[in-house]
Amino acid sequence: MGKPILDFALVSVKEEAQAEHVARFERFEVDLRSGELWKEGQKVRLPEQSFQILVMLLERDGEVVLRGEIRKRLWPNDTVVEFENSINAAVKRLRLALNDSADRPQYVETLARRGYRWMVPIKWTEANPVGLQALESQPSLHGLVSVAVPLVGKKVSHYRVLEVLGGGGMGVVYRAEDLKLGRGAALKFLPEELAAHPQAFDRFEREARAASALNHPHICTVYEFGEHEGQPFIAMELLEGETLSHLIAGKPLAVDRLLDVAPQAADALDAAHQKGIIHRDIKPANVFVTNRGEVKILDFGLAKLTSDSGTGILPVERPEDRQEEHGQDARATAGETPALLMSRTGVAMGTAPYMSPEQVRGEKLDARTDLFSFGLVLHEMATGHVAFAGETVAEVHDAIVNRTPPPAREANPDIPLKLEAIIEKALENDRDLRYQAAAEMRADLREVGAGLAPALSPVGGGNAAGIATPLTLAPLHRGEGGPKGRLRAYVAGRCG
Image 1 (cartoon, one colour):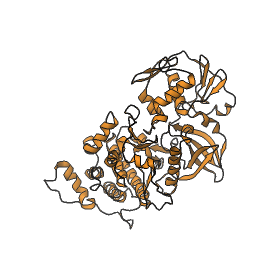
Image 2 (tube, one colour):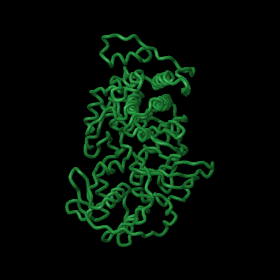
Image 3 (cartoon, rainbow, N blue to C red):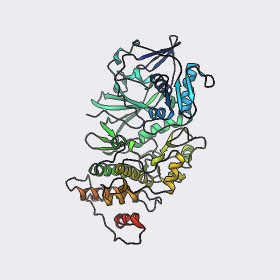
Image 4 (cartoon, helix red, strand yellow):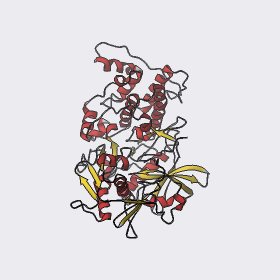
């Protein structure tokens, strides 16, 4: 059975606990298992992200830890936050805890535009702090929130916390047991440093409310939104499997696997859009495939609710929502946000390589923005790489707005022409020429899959009656603009 992987921004806990897990330097002591920093016998409060950076520096004693490596550890699914929770701010808080200085560093040396390096000798020991004996059999807790570790073995609401599954810049996730129903569950806690921010709390609650309004087999089920000792948490379905980003891993999916996964994801998007919920962050890391092959859409933290949602969640427009539809905050720098567009609230509103042209341009969004993003996911599933790449956010945004990605069959000749045509229609820059509904994409994907492998039974159907409708092929004309025009003709009769 695969290890559970939950929601966005998770760091898999893979290593077994090291025998020497306490690092001592000068007047300080760091315990990697408990996630604690001590100075002369006194515990020093250190936020999660700062502690993760400290651990990386200690583990790489004397070596340069690159900013890109730090970003990947803090925000493994390309979801980062700006300013209060940026790399610079996390390093600054670490220096404050160590009474260090950037101008005259004693512990942490800054290498301009590269990263950081630890400067003093470290002694590793096997000390076993009081109260942590119960954690001896747990995997290494390197980089997890210090205040979260003591929750293991405790009762939170009607859940008993069993172990840490993972953690990252946007939360810590635990495996838990529902004591009332006797089933497994996952508990996600908002990081301590974000819990005090009204906007972050509001988004966390919005994630729970939006997902819970969608009772659908291809959307991760939310059981409860609660609070434990001042820390908000979401109780959700415990999933066993991998995200699409792990499954792709730089290689295209097999065509039959792609055509099994993609219609399920499209079905989930259709359910959300029918409820007036726009996801706004569709990407491989937010598409989960269970060990049984069931697809689950994750992370509705950036979801936007339209006025006709019918969910009971009021779609009140707030100042931060208006900012999100007017592009990047002027304070966000390319150095701090290499993969994302940021908003003033400090929470990413989307992942740059998977944004629609209208998101990049700051226009008002509707459900078709998710269809473009899903088209980018399809392209990556088919080719093994992102459709729009660049060294900076500006380069990626320029490519999304002004360029057309290479045809998927150039990278993977094994995919059917009809699938390539579906991808191209989904990636139309003009949303009026794009697919207009997720149900259309779902029907066409199912038809392609049925045509290639009749033994694979599509889930549901292609129309309101649950019957798959055939893909109508328009006649091909020589003057339709080359290969792209000819490929588009496959879906023009049905969708154009």
